Amino acid sequence: MSPEVKGYFSFVLHSHLPYVTNHGIWPHGMDWLNEASAETYIPILNTLYQLRDEGFKPRLTIGLTPILCEQMRNGTFIEGFINYLENKITMAEDDKKLFIEWKSENLIRLSDMWKQFYTDIIVDFKEKYNRDLVNAFKILQDEGIIEIITCAATHGYLPLLSQDYSIENQIKVGIQNYKKHFKKAPIGIWLPECAYRPAYNWKNPIFTDEHEYARKGVEEILNSNGIKYFVIDTHLLMGGEAIGVYAARFEALKMLWENFKRQYKPPPVDFNKSPYRSYLVSSTSNFEAQVAIFVRDPKTSIQLWSAEHGYPGDGWYLEFHKKHFPSGHRYWRITSVKSSLGDKLEYVPENVEARLVENAGHYKQLIKDILFDFHYKNNKELGIVIAPYDTELLGHWWFEGPRFLYKVLKWVEMDPEIELTTCGKHLTEFPPINIVHIPEGSWGEGQGHWIWLNEWTTWTWEKIYEIERKLKAIFEKYRGTKDENLGRIIVQIERENLLLQSSDWQFLISTWSARDYAENRVAQHYNRINKLIGILEVYENTKNLLPEHQNYLNKLESIDNIFGAEIEEVLDLK
Image 1: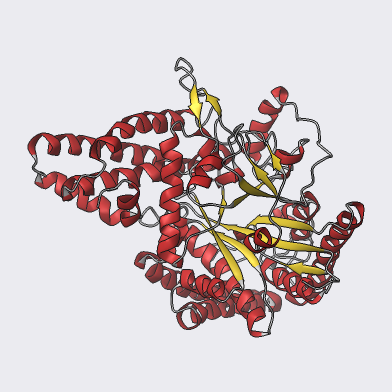
Image 2 (image 1 turned 90 degrees about the horizontal axis):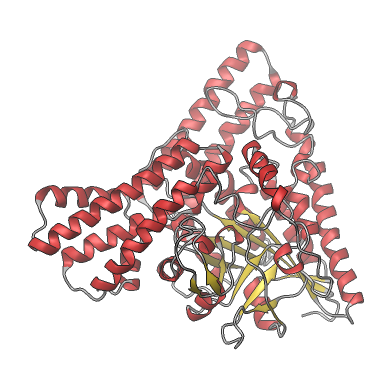
C-alpha cells in the first residue's frame, strides 16, 4: 500500500441467469444466455484481458452463479451459441440489403458494425477463450487479477425457504460446484437478491396455522460452510429508504410497490455506521458465527442504476428497447429518457467516446471524493467504496458499459491516492472488528420480500413449501444409501427441487417480463418432483426400476443434468 492511498474501491459484479438450457430458445430460454454471453460476458472478459495485457491489474470482484457456470460449460450452449452468433451476422447482412434500398448511409454502416461485432465475438469465443468462458475467468483469478465469488446453487431466495436444510443445500451445492469449476473453495458469496434473514423464531408466511420455530441466521449457515463475507444493500446497515433498482424498469413492479408501500415505514437512518467500512454480522447472542459484510455505496450505485439520472441514460448511448424487426439489432440512440420509441434518433457511434470519457472521469472522481471525505472525517481511516451491479447491466442493458468499465478500472489504478482491491483481499488486509446486527431484507424499495412474495406468486411458495416438507423426510431416510438406482432418483429429485426454488421465477412473474414462461417452469419442476417421488416409492417396494420409469429418469437426466456429483456429496449418496 502506498502512503498516499486514502481509500479503496471495488466493483462487485453479479453474473446470473436462470437455468434455461433445454428449456426453450426464443423469446424465452437459451437466447437469454446467448445474449448475455455475446453482449456482456465476452466483452467484459475482453476488457479484463486488455487491461492485463497493458500491464494493469484490474482487481474486480465478480460472482458467477453455479447455475450459470453449469450452463456456460454445457455442450448445448457451446454449440448453440455459435449458431446464434452466425445467425446474428446473417441478419445484419439482411438488414444491410434493406438499408441499401432505403439509401440510408448511417444505417448501412451500423449494420456493418453489428456484423463486425458478432464476427469478433465468434473469434474471441473460439480462439481466445477456447469455447470455455468459465475457464477464461478462472485464469484471471489464478493470476491474482480478479476474485470470483459464488452464490446459492440456483439463486434460491433464502429468507423465504421454510427449512434450514434447503438453505444448507443451496449453499453447499454452490460451494461444491465452485470447487469443481475453479479448483479452490470460495471465500465470498453473493446472496441471491442480496436477501438476508437473521436468526429468530420464524413463522411460515403462507401456512399461517403452522407453529413458529427457531431458524438459523443466514450468516450461521455461511460461517459453518467456510464463507467469509457477503454483500448487502445500504439500507440493511444504515436504515432509511432503499434505492429502488428495478421498479423504474418494470411497470408491474410499480403497481406492486404502490400497494405495498402503504403499510411500509422505513427505519430511521443510523448515522453511527458507514457503508465505507466492512463489519462482522451476527444475529445470535454468543457471536460465534461471524461473517463479514460489505455494503453498497448509494452515491456511485445510482450513477449506473438510474435510467433517468445515471450515465446509461445519456442521449448518445445505444437505446436498448428499440429493435429492428426481425433481426433484433439496435440502430437508435437513447436521444432522451423521456422520448418515446418512435422519437428515437439514429445511433452515431463516433459521438459516444466523448461521453464515456466524461462519465468515467466523473465516476472515478466521485469515488475519490467519497473516500477523501470519509478519510478526513474519520481520523484518516481508510474506507472502501463497494459498487455492486448485475454484470448484465454492462453490455446487455448498457451497450457501452464494458468500455466504461475499462476506463474506470484503468484510471483508478493509475491514481496513487485510491487503490483497486477485491473484497477478499481487503478483508485479509483490514479485518473488521465491529459486530453489527442487521434486519431481514433484500435490495430495493421496502427492503422486504414483496417482489418475490405477493398475490401473484403466493401459489409458487405453496408448491415450494409442500415439496420442502416431503423431501426433508426422504433425504434423511436415504442419506448414505449405496443403492445406485435410489441415488439416481434422489439426485434428480434434488436437481428439480433446486430449480423449483430459483428466485428468478417469482421475479419474472412479478415483473410480467416472462410471466407465462416462469409459471410454466414452476409447474414443470413441481410436477417432475412429484412423479419422481412416485417412482421412488415404487422402487422402494419392488426394488425394480420399471422400464417406463427408467425412460422417464433418463429423459430428465438429459434435460436437467446439473450438479450431479455435488448433490451426491451434499446428500451423502456416494
